[in-house]
Image (cartoon, rainbow, N blue to C red; front, side, top):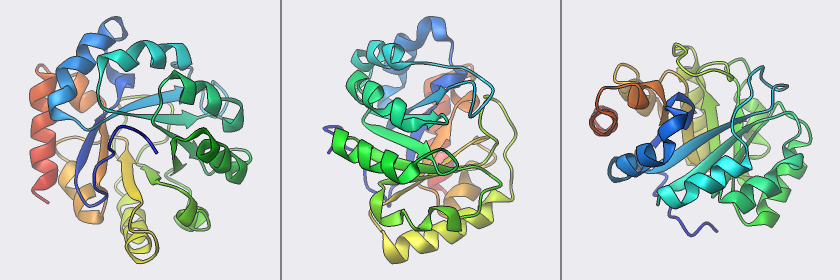
Length: 227
């Protein structure tokens, strides 16, 4: 179990996504946001599962001393089993793999063996039913509300029905599981996704590209809690 508390599955938590941050000043940016956030979301892309390439384990390790928050590594990679150990050793508290990737069941088991929390993500066009067989084996379900690969995309409102369906399944069968959402989360969408059932809100541009990132994170939490 992670030494960093993930918080209650019933509580709203804010997870800034560093994909939208200025990579030249990531350490100070994370330290600034610590008082207003709960998790740090780290997007890992392999150039194959998604067309972009992003951060690796060395960057995660270099950022670990700059934040007391739970590090939530989202592995947008075709073969997650090849990468899990490196990110766990680098300081990831939680590793989320995609249900559309290779050897999902084995990857979940590998993450468990490494002692990190494990999540399962699904793309906007993947039905909720795709993750249900794994619901009892994971700590997090991550609903993508944009197609993964790039920051700054617009929210896809059709995913709200999927969030509601997963909220019902989690409440009935796995209440300890966190329901997370990522993509286009901002002041305009936060209340809707929380009302639908999401409790961990990943936000990149809405926080890091604001004139006052700390104030933006606090405002996003207030907006989410209003739901």
